[in-house]
Length: 195
Length: 220
Image (cartoon, rainbow over all chains, first blue to last red; front, side):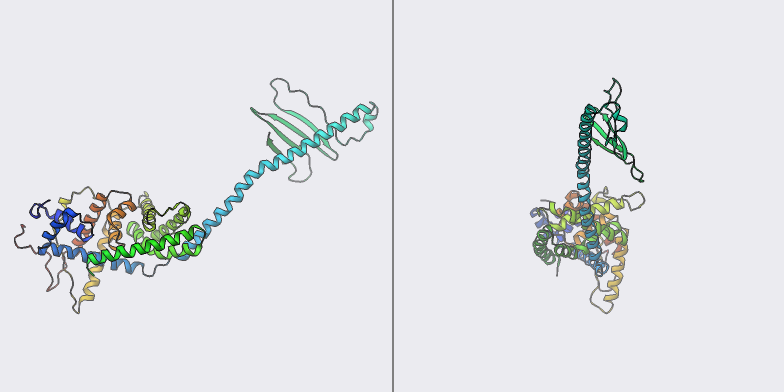
């Protein structure tokens, strides 16, 4: 254990500070008791006390009227609301491919149905009847993709509407783009789905 | 109440506080907004006093406290109760405040933690006003001096003084809250106190202990 006489003024003050803060180790306890026999050490301790009291008074004066509860709770509500709003957005993102797939599925089923009807009719109709026929839909059979060509276009006549199905091959998948002619402003929206 | 009694009372009261906090946290974790509100009411002033000690600006401190509680709210589900709520909160407040004061647009007094303890000014005990008719005036004067001295301290020094003197945190708790070693906390606290003592050192009042008195037998 260090002797009282071996301590510098700063070490003595640090030792008393730990005592004041209740952080004195068992080894230091005896030393502090020796130190406290001196007036100077007791004065030092008293000054720590006074500084502490004044800091507490200054703090109390500063915070006594503080009340941030409403602001905090408003922000908490805001945060939880935005957290809640994020979920549907996430659901929307997940729902989008399912919806698009359904649209493409319906379109493909329709196209297959039309192709079946047309092939049956064409086998029955004679060449002269073709001009008179009011086809519900006529599909020009897609040309096989030539080497190097990447897009297949199937023209579709949906009665009053004209349209086309684009089959765009990718690396691992094909993208189907259904395009229809429409008079409305938003009619040229394409639906694009990776298959 | 002397410092020993105050320490004991602090510890006891903090143990009770921690139990109540844990109960409120459990309720808040299950979605009880009233419980969270109570946590805010209980800890906002303490959080503010640490924040303002570090950022020195009331508006910034208010912002830090609000943001700290938002982070607490977001992290409630992860809070296991292993560390006490107030240590967790103080850590958030400290980190937010440090981020704020480190922004390039802010200027703050530089830290002087590299200064060894031996270079600190010599002991300069200060006078303590006694209960005389001028006591209230003297006390106010001392408080003003302390406030001015606190304002001149580097942010980290103010932070530890407030954590220790106002909230009675142990060195260990302060080290955890500030993310530094216990030794660093001791050093900061020591230098902070020396500066605050120095600010009061020339305060003399008849009948009080002189600030420059040497102890008999003590080497100058």
